[in-house]
Image (cartoon, rainbow, N blue to C red; front, side, top):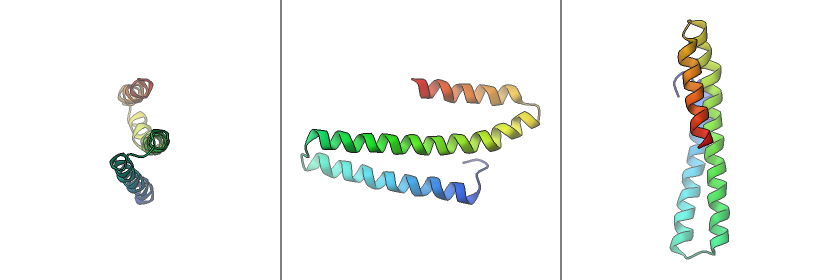
Length: 91
């Protein structure tokens, strides 16, 4: 994660491992022909969990990389990256 401290990295990795387990659970649900609404409920939880991971990484990026870029006079790069992420999230 670029400039993340070990605590931030650990939190993200922990969340990703939880999501990995949820994905395995989804695979099992599909293989067992689980009721569709139950599967959709679980996929929604996975999407929210992944969104939370994304937010954690973005927060770290804004508080480290972007701050450093602005301080070093590279604000155009910082703004461009933030706009790129914002555009991705809107799609």
